[in-house]
Amino acid sequence: MEEDELRSLAEALRADLPSLIDDAAERAAIETDLAQALDQPPGTAHDALRRAIAANTATREWIRRRTPETEEADRSIGPLGDPTAPLGVLFTCPNKDYSFVQETLADDVPNCPYDGCVLERQDR
Amino acid sequence: MLTAFWSGLGDEFAKRWAPRILTPAFAFWAGGLAVLWWHAHAQGVSEHGWAHELSATATWLRGVSGVAQAVLVVVGLILLVASALVAERLTLPLLRFLEGYWPRPRWLRNRLIAYRRWRRRRWKQRVDDLAVRQRYSGLTAAEDHELHTLESAPPADTTRLEDLRQRRAAGLSAQQTAELGRGRRYLLLRYPPRDGLGMPTKLGDVLRAAEYRPYSKYGLDAVICWYALWLLLPDGVKTELVQARTVLDNAARGWLWGALFLVWTPWSWWAIPIGVLIPVLTYYVGILGAASLFGELMVTAYDLYRFKLYDSLHLPRPLSPALEREQDGRRVTNLLWGGLNEPGLHYVDPPADGAGASTS
Image (cartoon, rainbow over all chains, first blue to last red; front, side):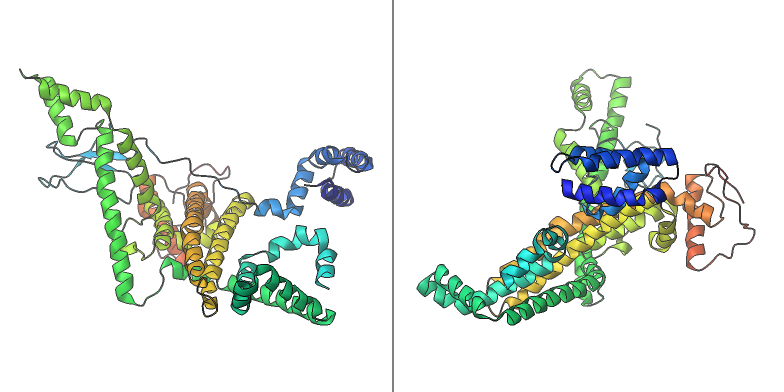
């Protein structure tokens, strides 16, 4: 965010401080920081303004609501990759000729296709 | 006039209006104007060159009066905004169309569904086989049993025993592991598990698969319970979901404007490749990815916040995953859909600390 935008936001934030922060001492401290940052010459106040605005939880939330473009920014929680750990429950035919892994509950456990036996749940 | 308009907007335009105007709708109309310009100037370009034709157009624009230029700009902006609004209203019907919610032609729908179910069955067979081999360190169930038999009574010729031991030590190959992971992801995210839930398109299957998972895990019908759960979700969760949904809607609108580019075909043949390529790219690159993400976040919202449903409806929380799936989840679904008529069931107060479970 450019310094001009930060200045505009800081001035708007100063006006909103009484409704944002109940504690008078806390509000006065933020007010002082904002005033000092705004008093700095143009072109040099960027970092001070950012610090002053982001110094308090309530002001951070206020700034987040006032800058919707950050909400609209594309953020991806991103797929980490494909799952490769052993998953689900192993079922085995008593005759040891067939096994089946039920990876999701939507999968029905079949009977053994060779001898029709009901598969038994294993703990391995 | 035009120069004054743009310079008057200046930084304000760049910061506030550019994202709103430089949309797929703008690309559609700008592309259409380019097509019309080319239709009118193609011969001139071939005879006199690009520079001559462009300067002729600029000269014509400069010759138009200031009032006429202003009217042109205003009409253009109105057209842009109005068409963008219409496209916004069409987003939901378009998404349903892309999901495959069209009853006719029935033969086409049935064939597409059959094809997609065939693809799922093929992946399922492969994943089932690899999942078992993973449990037996690369062996089949019969081979694992054979190995145990051989180890308990080693034969004189140990060739087979050594072969099975070596294969067990090696486990799944890298290719098999990769195939198993990919297959699992496809089966979970891209295909609903039941044939009766199959949809004719990939997008339809992706969203159906997500919608079915809360039911198969918790007995909660995701569609019926969604509005109630939505009202109970924390703001941050809603923000993430809205954002994912917005990305999906934007991608769908990109598809629409790309397909609409075909209307310029009578004026230029190259509207056809653009009108085909953009929807295809948007579908496979944008829409499917956004739908997967939205579906995953929706399922995760059920995973994490479903007990709020029980508490807010004053229904007893489930005592076990099995009971939740078979009884309690279905109870919530029925209550939200048509009401409950279950003898002996009483409302309960939600746990004070939000952590305990109540019983009826």
